Image (tube, rainbow, N blue to C red; front, top):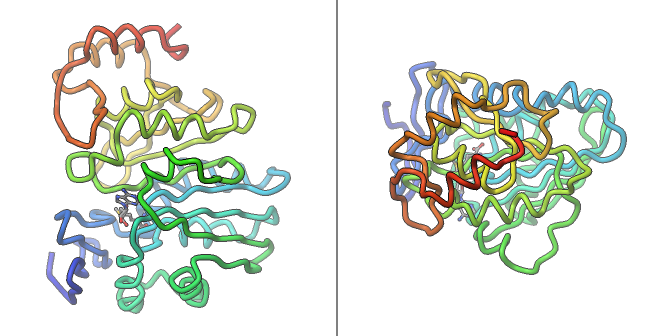
Length: 287
Ligand SMILES: C[S@@+](CC[C@H](N)C(=O)[O-])C[C@H]1O[C@@H](n2cnc3c(N)ncnc32)[C@H](O)[C@@H]1O
C-alpha cells in the first residue's frame, strides 16, 4: 500500500480499491484494509445489524455503542446511512485516544467520508460530546475516552444499555486486552436482557466465537466483507441471528487447536480446556 502522509503513530494508505484508510504504525494494522472504510462499515455493521430495518419500526431512542471510535468511519457510516429514520439516536463511542480521529480529520479530503459531519467531528475532538439534528432525527453523540476494559470493570455509569454494538478493536494478536473472556462477560452483563442487542465483529476465529458464547451471547455466522468470506455476529437473543452456529461448528471447535478464550492480556493459542468444553456444550444455543 503506498504511503501518503504520516503522523508519529499513523499513516494514510491507499487500498487496492482506490480508497484511503488509516494505518497504525504501532499495531502494524490498517483500520479497514480491504474494501475501504465506508464499504466495510456498511457491510459489516449497517447491513449485518439490519439497522435500517430495525430503525424503521423502532419506538423511542436507539442506542449504539461504538467500541473503538478510531477514525470514525463506522460511526459516521451508521449515521449517514440511517438519517431518514425519525427515532432519536444515542451514539456512545469508546476509545483510549483521539489521535487516530485527529489524524484522519487532517486527511479528511483523501478519506472522503467526513462530508457534512465536520462540525460534529470537531465537537467530538474538542468537547467529546454533541447533540444535533441529523436529517429527520436528533442525535446525542458522546465519546468515553479511556481504557475500555478498565471502564467496563469500574463503577462508572454506562447509561442506558445498547441495541447495537460496533466492536472494532485491533486484532486479537495485536490488541489482546480488548478480546478477553472477562471483557466480553462484563460487556454482556451491561446489556438489558429485555432489549435485543447485536454485536458484529470482523473476526471469525474459533477463539473469538467461543469467547462470545462463554460470555453469554448467542453467536452466528456473519456476512462476508471484502476478502473475508465470513465474519461473526453475537446477540443477546437468537432472534437477531440469521445463521446461529450449529452442532457441526461445536464439534469442530472441540477438535480445534486454537479455541480456548484468552483471559489475560496476552495472546496465546490453546485447544479448549475440559471446563470450557463443558460450559460450551451446555450453552442454551446447543440445547
Ligand atoms: C481498528 S481501530 C478502529 C477503527 C474505527 N472503528 C473506525 O471506524 O475508524 C481500533 C481502535 O480501538 C482503539 N482501542 C484499542 N485498544 C483500546 C482500549 N484498550 N480501550 C479503548 N480503545 C482501544 C484504538 O485506539 C483504535 O482507535
